Length: 180
Image (cartoon, rainbow, N blue to C red; front, side, top):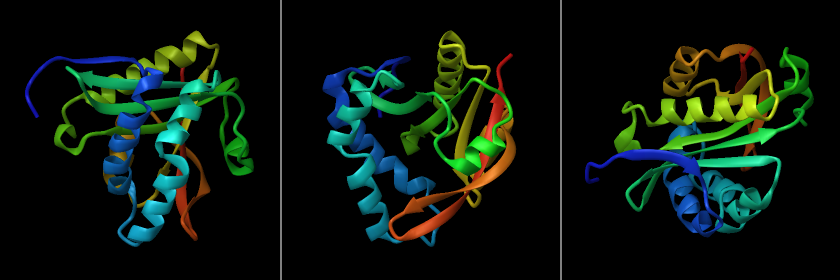
């Protein structure tokens, strides 16, 4: 990937296809080794397709931010405003109102380069702007790299929840960061 400046900005509706392609590349990297290729493909088809991103980008409760390097998307994050729908999450999250950091993925060639931190910083500012006093997220308990990153970013483990990938319910930590 050529060197150039990375900017963080809201995604554009026309970028749904590019977001799908980036998601198809990055989502499997966050899955535990036991996750089958078929389960990953099904999840991508159901939740990370071009059509899914078109819905996300049109949803006023969601903010999709992208890390843009020239004309290439190299990362994205999704913030979902509102109360957690999952009962386990609702019981674990301590501070209200809250928002969910629903997705955070960076092109693997840029892991460790500060792109994820920049996306998180922008997400946190956006959450505060919408009146949230905390942001929560779910992360697979076996994803050591992501858990280290979120710990360093100030997200504490406050509970656990299930996360379906294909026919398997994976175990996720619920992490929360208080903003005020």
